[in-house]
Length: 67
Image 1 (cartoon, helix red, strand yellow):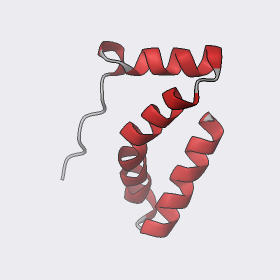
Image 2 (tube, rainbow, N blue to C red; image 1 turned 30 degrees about the horizontal axis):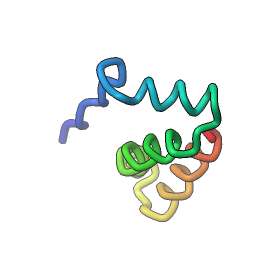
Image 3 (cartoon, rainbow, N blue to C red; image 1 turned 30 degrees about the vertical axis):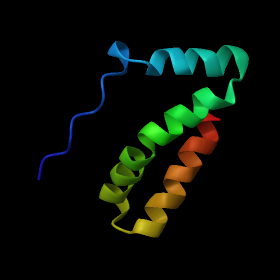
Image 4 (cartoon, rainbow, N blue to C red; image 1 turned 180 degrees about the vertical axis):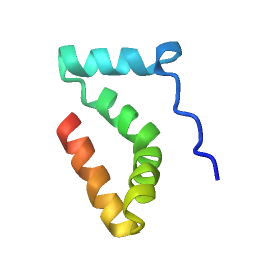
């Protein structure tokens, strides 16, 4: 089974969201990033740990570090 391609954040709204979050602490920008990538991050973590609960905990840690 092949992994889905990673999104190309250079060609979409993501850079603007990241910039707004970094420069202005705009919470809605972080929420947009979280909502868009949470499933991708959880699935990526699951591929490594093979346990849904652990994958969700790791994904939560990832987003906490980003925030």
